[in-house]
Length: 327
Ligand code: NAD
Ligand code: ZN
Ligand code: ZN
Image (cartoon, rainbow, N blue to C red):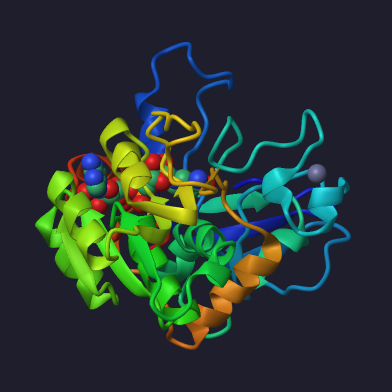
């Protein structure tokens, strides 16, 4: 059990979500990453305060909290605005569970500062954990485009897995007038997407492109969110994006979308957001507390964590796999 140092907090883990980014890490070719192995995975964490380090204040043992994941320096301009996901200080600490720092797939997690803890209120940490990445990343990706999504608008969500399902719910919560189209290779995921508010579910590929063009009277969608990021999905995303729209790449599929004068559509902005800010996480928790968003969660013991990743790899996790090291 780690000992919290000055200002740190020791958290008893309730749930640690298994993100597809962990699979990208696990599958990275040997030598292609810069961090030192081994370290503990788990960057989507929630639990209960176990012990406050010397000088840490504001929380008490037993408090249910969720952990903001992208830890920064806390002092640069972006960090001071709560955007530690875009910390610009060289040599900043890496987020727990990514980049070599121990994460939450363990009984206990050391959190470097109380500013990363958001109270969960009545939410159960075992259910809520994915809100801090699947929820927050999707929320941030949608929120920057909300002004485009008025009546008559269309939003396309490519990849209706953990993040995509959250994006669909966030779109419905923030932009109730927009038509949400989910695109996936799995019919099961499309069925789940519809239960979460998607107006249409389409199998990924040329037929989906044609259907979206038809639905939008040839214009394309105001916002296209790609939660996969491979060649076929980015090609599709560029084909169905509208003039003055947003093409947002969230998936780490490592492909590229050519941008030139003719494609994507004129003045369509291409962006690649990473995670989200601390104030946005507070807003995500508000949405969850009021029942407007809810992650579809499947629980695994710590011993079953590797099995959970195998299932995620095989596309067999319906929503999010969450490891519960303390039962
Ligand atoms: P997931 O495995 O839960 O979901 C991926 C979904 O994509 C699945 O439903 C799968 O069926 C679908 N899919 C696969 N190939 C497809 C295709 N060709 N067309 C349409 N759908 C397809 O993964 P996740 O945890 O939701 O993560 C999604 C992506 O987002 C991953 O690449 C992950 O690394 C990335 N990610 C990015 C950030 C960020 O800050 N940008 C944060 C977290 C995760
Ligand atoms: Zn993640
Ligand atoms: Zn910083």
